[in-house]
Length: 133
Image: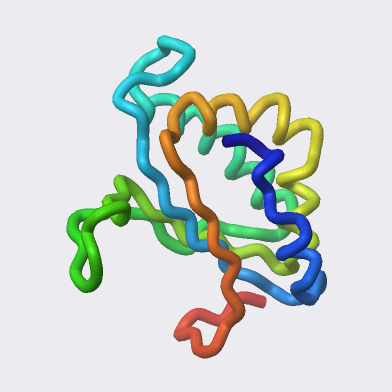
């Protein structure tokens, strides 16, 4: 799991100038792969570096929280620890961040150390109570 898993083809099929909310689903490792605390600890290090990069590209965290239970659907394979909704003003801003040397060298190692699995789903707004921009 690393930036090489980025679905560039899928992202390039989207309108690069369209705003996007990324739904992040994370499952943490019990221990960080670098031996420095838990998977959650490594994720906090990742977040501390990544959030300023998101904001520098005009994005923002909309919501984060702990996943508590599968309310509808199959539980197998769907147990997540944490969710985050992250707004980017354009798909291109997300791609720019994720493919930057700074992200790959400084941020992604903490994500990889902390997350056993990290799924990001790009969404296109159909309705929102929040107006960004």
